[in-house]
Image (cartoon, rainbow, N blue to C red; front, top):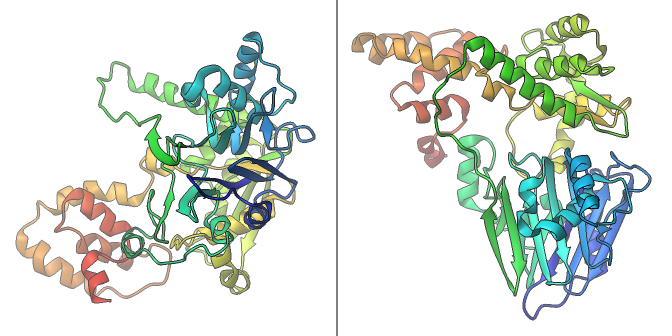
Length: 446
């Protein structure tokens, strides 16, 4: 990953100083240890801390068009850059590097604001058009790469992490109470809100265009959830899913640095690892185990690795590591985040970095393939609601409350109490109550 930041002066404001830009970029050094870059042009300033993935020696950013009047800094990767590159060269553009990011500048020149629809990748970028004096921010369709922005000191500031904005002189730090309530409900602060008042996260599939002293956020893509008639057999549908996943993984294997995969043994990471192996890649997989056996799934990862023939490396999370790491985690997280998996994920990332620079993962697979037990519980809920009211209102809840408490991962008493406590609610609310920590009534009583 890389880290980008910067800003543009709005009407009547002084331009961004190089000192302020350097301070902002300094907070992102952990995202980009390989190089830094700055571009100052009139009212605009762009900065980047780069983790080199493609065109390691020649792809330092900012990157420019032929006359240097359009510049870009980008966090992410454009998977179809080779196809776009050929199309742009045929149209007369001259590209000086082999970087995927340079393609974006020329695509903007060629197709205007519609260029973003042609990009296949994960990205958050800032593009400064010095000819039209406009700044364009964009975030990839599912929102893999983060981007914060805020209006302050007569400027529109942006950064890959909130801490980049906080490094700007006198940036306000007022807590947003609505965002706090959302955090207590969802265990994170959903986009577009931020835990700090006045700061927003750019929505997935959106652009932010800043020009003529104002700015406007607008979508360039929306997820189509309209149901379609199924004309294929189950076998054909399964093959379509597999080929789609395989093609997606193929595009993500484009890299000029060592690449691996996080493997837990679950559906999502195992599917990604299988696609890598099927593509003929020499797969380096990385897994993490736990001393607490109720949390430990490393045996499944080893089984998948053995079956697929990966070069598998594994570490074990010991309790002493938590005492060392937990006090430092707040500095690594921009906003409150209650998913404890961030701790083993951080350790696994640090472990894998000893051998590879990039690692694929399976995040999102459980949502797509109904891997979570909360999704499976909705079927059980249908049967539960058919039981006599005496059982569901009185007897079963009372019995569940008497279950002995266990500290194992997803223990029977924990799941049973969560399940019963939400059964009086509609499915969507029920689902959230199963997942969240503090329902609104509990928040009010705190």
